[in-house]
Length: 281
Image 1 (cartoon, rainbow, N blue to C red):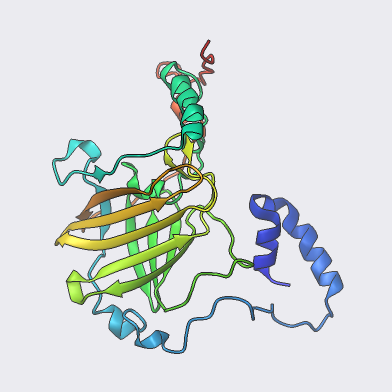
Image 2 (tube, rainbow, N blue to C red; image 1 turned 120 degrees about the vertical axis):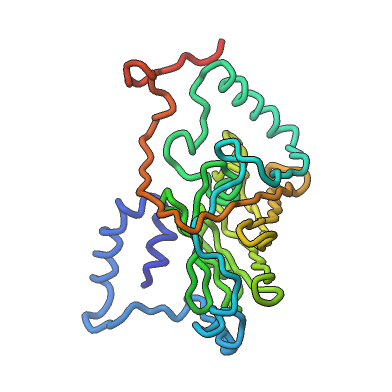
């Protein structure tokens, strides 16, 4: 019995039910069962080391993305604009979203996960003005670490997506990438499935089950990273939603620890006390 099974069975409540499952698992297995059976875990193909970024030596030939990246539009900085295609929301979803927007406009407590310290997830995080992140590398994998603590694992070792039986829907999803091009001009192409249906690409609007995200990361200047993103969310949208975000690199920044205080958007600025807004009439 694997840890992946525990996670899939318990989901977000794993902290509560994991000890019970562990006890049951250990009671059912022989005492000399040995290591956890990981035979069904994804394995990189035999040629993984020959792919770009497959060894430490080839990582040195990848684009230099080290440093801290911040969206251009933060603090009113002039820079390349963020561009978006029209958002085509299904009529039945739009009717519900209009109620959410009215609630927000009239000072109500908008039911948005991000307002209550739950991450937007993919792709909302990547398009957020608050998103600041760094990259890391190891053979066959690119890490994207955000200051609020979320970590994306982008596998570039040639593996396929997890199977339907093993796929677990998460905030960041199951990301498989590959490199196109050479040197500093190379592009990281990422395909992501297994995304939590409650992720919000627009505040207060969940993207629904079965969403699919593709991204292209590339430098458009020595210190400008451009990410071309397409979100296909068939449960919510009538057509894919495309947007382009651009980030400036700060080579000398050291990110500080970040912690979210739940409901800090609903505090009285004078007293510091919680505000409980009345719902719209």
